[in-house]
Length: 421
Image (cartoon, rainbow, N blue to C red; front, side):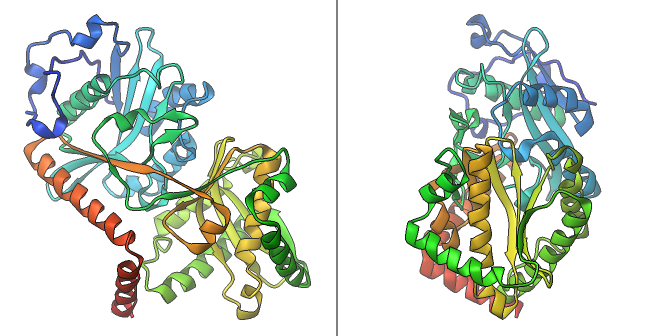
């Protein structure tokens, strides 16, 4: 464990990370009291951990206290991801915990560092498999913490551990009714919006009725009657290891075929990612609270549709989904039918928010009537880091503009399919 007791360093009031060059010996500067501490700043200590399990006590304390967070920042999700994926990629945990004068955690930033092209880059765990990223924030500080406090924490952590760049992408602006404190930094919209449904009604039937027009509900019920004619047809939420393995095995095959047909790189063919997903779907089954929840429609002959998501009791977020490639059975939209069951599931469990992840797709617009803004915070802390921050910000902004122009984006996808051909 790398534990850092930080005394806030004095900086000019108008300082921004991308406007100055930090030296590696910044901590040899004369210590002085930051103006905020005279006004009662609460951050008394900052710890930086290079092992996930060393941060577990603070992590679980924040979770148990109802921390403001996304479902992807559950401790078990991050621990399993690092164990099976990033620990084999020379990526090191860089978990920042800010504490008050009693030593209690105020917030935790679950980050990791990697070296790329000579730069040390800090970012969230999960890569493309995490649609929403963020910290864990104690409720009584989330509305009042200042950008100066956050800036000093990142500055000290970067200087002590040689971080050139913070690449903090795909962060939600709103988190359980609170504004994400990281939005206080300079930011840009992410290339993709998140498609979100606010669950209404007191039970599953009411939730579905509030989500879809009665005509659409009728059409999907007609389709489900066609599927129900298949021997052994059923909707299920995986609750046993055998169910998990059967559904996941089907998902990997279905996804491989669909992505290959679209000329898209299959991010699920990595053995380490496969191991993570399988472990996360098994972990917590015995208590009824798996790290990744699996839902499916199936019959005796095959699994018809799959949905995998993470849930923190307040929000269910889609990580992955797929449906059969059987021409006859796919006619009856098993993926959409499965979503009607999941909406009802959310209504029964009183889950307030349900999202279908990042990126536009027509089926998402049928269920999700709103999009949720997400943002990127890319901060350089050294001269090379600042140059890289500028380039990364420009690249992601260009990608967003391309995706906002459907005709251009479809053309690029066609070219991609031809190239992968």
